[in-house]
Amino acid sequence: MPSSPLIESRFDAIKTEEPYAMTTIQTDVAVIGAGTAGLAAYRAAIAAGKRAVIIEGGPYGTTCARVGCMPSKLLIAAAEAAHELRHTAPFGVHVDGQIRIDGREVMARVRSERDRFVGFVVRGVENIPEADRIRGYARFIDNTTLEVDGQTTVRASRVPPVPRRRCRRRSRRSATA
Image 1 (cartoon, rainbow, N blue to C red):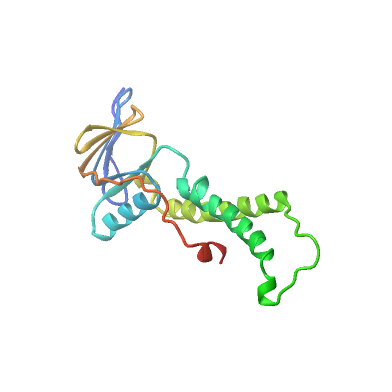
Image 2 (image 1 turned 60 degrees about the horizontal axis):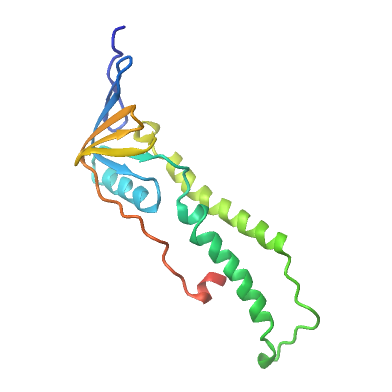
C-alpha cells in the first residue's frame, strides 16, 4: 500500500502516516498532560509563536476539579456552614430549632459545582485545534522524543517539565465564599 500524503496542522506540526507504521509528528513543544499546568504550558508556547501539541491519556478536566481538592473543599464548606450555625448566639443571632443537614442535597451541590469546574477545563481543551490534541499516554524515548500509546511518535524541540502539583490550599473563609 502506498503511504498517505503529508498532512499539516494549523501550526505546521508535520504528520506522516504509513500503513502499519507509527504516525510521526514534528513540533517545537510537546506538553504531556492537559491539567492546569499543561494547559498553561501549551498556551505559553503558542503565545511565543511555537508549534505545540498537548498529550493527554486520561479524562479532560484536571484531577483537582474532577476528584481532588475542589469537591473536597465543597464538602468542607458545607460542614463549616453547619458548624457556624451552631455558634451564632454571641452575635445576637439565634437559630431556633434543629439544624438539619441533607446529605443528598450537599452531594447534589458538590456534583453540580464539580461538573461546572470540569466544564470550564473541558471547554478550554476543546478550543485547542484538534490537530494539536493527542489522546493517549506518552512515554519518553529520549529527551525530545515521545511515543504515545505505541501509535504515534512525537519529535519535539522541547518537552517542558510539567510537575504534578497538589491544589493550593485556600483559607477557611474563602472556601465558604
